[in-house]
Length: 106
Image (cartoon, rainbow, N blue to C red; front, top):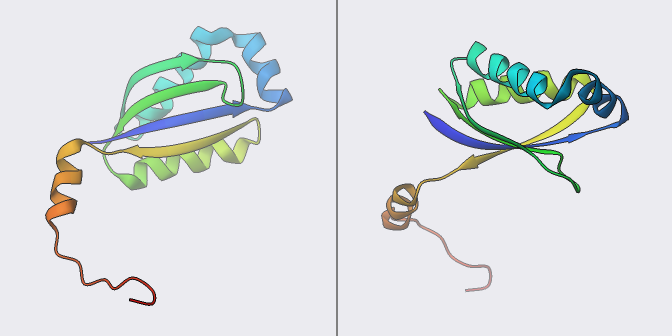
């Protein structure tokens, strides 16, 4: 499974909904949507500042991650940014991958 960091920022309507259902209710909703696409909720934290919540999930593939992102963003109540988390071993493999690249002007 692929791991993602989801950053969520609520607009005024989303914040009103959060006040109404509470943090535990929102976490349960997120867990349900992630599980509906075959994923797993690893952690969920609220914060304050530009980002209102940080969520780490395991998704079966990028299509599942995109489906959740599209569904949540389509509501207009919250804006999510989904960031793939990359394990160190993937960086090692990428660093060993031969690449035919020439810098501009070189």
